[in-house]
Each structure stands twice: as C-alpha cells, then as structure tokens.
Length: 394
Image (cartoon, rainbow, N blue to C red; front, side):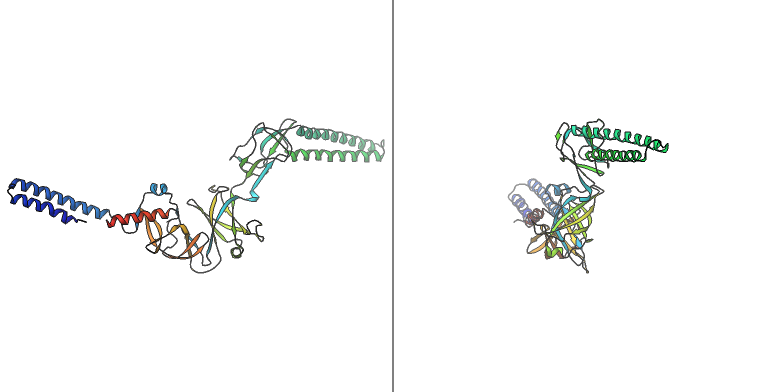
C-alpha cells in the first residue's frame, strides 16, 4: 500500500526531470504548483479521515437505522442475591374480572347496544332478544300479578267480614293462604324473567345485561342472528388488572412464594407485579407448576394474549444479580461482549458470563444493570463491527 508521502514524491520527481530536460521554467513552475496543491489536498484528506475514525469497538447507528435493523433495546434485569427466574409468559385477563355473557333463552337478536372495545357498566343492556319464550315468561308475570292482586283483594274483604263477625275464621285463613301463594307465584315468575334477562321493552323481548362493568372484548353475534339458549353472546372484562401466567418446574416452583416480585417486559415496556398464586398441583398436560402474578393495568399498556417475558425474583440476600437475554451476548475475538447503547449507536462492552437462567444469562462482571443494551439483532451489530474494523485496517 502506497503512503501519502510516497504518492507526493512521484509528481515532484517528474517535475524536476522535465525541468532538467529543457521543458522550460514556466512548465516546471506550473507542474510544481499543481504538485503542491495535490500534496496539500492529500494531506487534508488524511487529516479528515483521521478525525472521522470512530473509537474502536463502537458502531454508529441512528435511531431509524436501529429500528430498521430490528434491534430491540432492553435493560438488564437486576435481582437480589437469591437470583432470578426469567421465562416466557402470556398476559391473561384476571379470572375474577372476566365474564362471559350468555343468552338464557333462544331467540333473534334485534338490538346490539355495545361494540368491541366499548365500555359497559354493570347492569347495562348489551343486547335485546325477541322470542316467543320471552313472551310466555312475561305473560306469566302479568298473569301472576293479576292473581296476586285478586288474592289480596279477597283477603282484605275476608278481614273486614271477619271483623264484622259475618264470615268465619276459616274463610279468613283460606284467603290469607291464597294471597300468600299468589305472592309466591308472582315472585317466581319475576325471577324467571330476571334470569332470562329482564327488560327489553315489548312483551316478547328480553334485554341481556352485563353482570360486571368493563370493556367488551369479544362479540359473537350480529343483528338478526338467531341464537340458542346458553349461547355466549359477549365477553366483558375489567382490564384495570391483568394476570401473567408462567409454568415452572417443580424444583423452581419450590423457590417461589406468593408476594414474590415479578418484572414484566415486552417491546420496551416494563411493569412490576407480585405473585398471587403458586399452584399446589401440576398441570396434567405439561407437568409444570402454574404460577400467576397480577399486574396493574390501569394505564392500558398490556393486552390479553400478548406474549411477554417474566422475571421472578427469588428470595435471598447479597449483591444484585444482573441478567440479560442470551441473545444479547456475542463472542468477539474469544471475548463475550454486550452491545451497550450510546448517544450515537452502540459500544461492544466486554462482560463475564455466569450461569444460564431460563432464556437469560447471568452477567457477573461488566454491567451495572442501569445500561440500555441491544437485546436482539446483536449478530447484525457484530457483523457491522467486523466490517468497520476491516475497513479501518485497509
């Protein structure tokens, strides 16, 4: 490879030779001037290249390039001396805050008052069903109400006649019994309508009310559809609190207790939770132990069914343990490195890797846990770093 000094020597030598051969003083001066200009330009180029050279082990990337490369920025997990269990998990609705809304009787859907995602209060109507069975139930209520009114009227008459010593006591007792039975029949008919839904306006219509307040997260019917009895129409959930379910081996589950802190992460979002339930029974299919943690979701950042990463902190004392995803660690020149985010891109930071913890690895040295690191796409960063070093050598 020819250096800048060598490239400058050739034109100078050529100028001297032309002058000595009688090429004329004017020609020699012009060439010498051009040569001086070229040398100055080459020296300026060399100085500029020296200034632009990035520090060793760094990669310059803009935020847009990071997103385009599919690189996910994460923070290391820091747990107490007892360690941390990091596993994949799924966001689920709180079982106590999710309710399926079904049709108690068959009929045709004539009105839908709520759509997907809309809020609903407890007792508010979700849909109205038109049905002959609804007409029969409401007709029975009206008939029972009429019988009850007649029985009450007869009872008042017998009470008056008994007080006037016109009617015997047994007639009063019979009237009182008939009135009581009529009231029971009326309440039964009203409860049957309430069990079917109640309301609805017309005699042949029943309104389906929401048993809880929340959001409509599923709707399985459309207007005009005929539904059978007990068919699920809606699913309503109160998503201010969601649950995270993980499956642990029996050995790991023995280290987890209700109340253990859990860090939930996904796509740059992070929440804290607490273990609320550690099953005493193995799942029949997976032979694992289901563990449930409850997450405050009043901000609405988590969605039911979303895959997340759950890091369960185990009890223990001592210094904090730093863990990172296994995909965040790369080997460069027989050294383990993690790509730490910088204002201009990333820097390959040497680390000492400890034992694996699920899909994560423990970092015993090199990170404090306060950094932002590349959790995915690190192979791309490694290739870019090798490419930059090769160009620097050339």
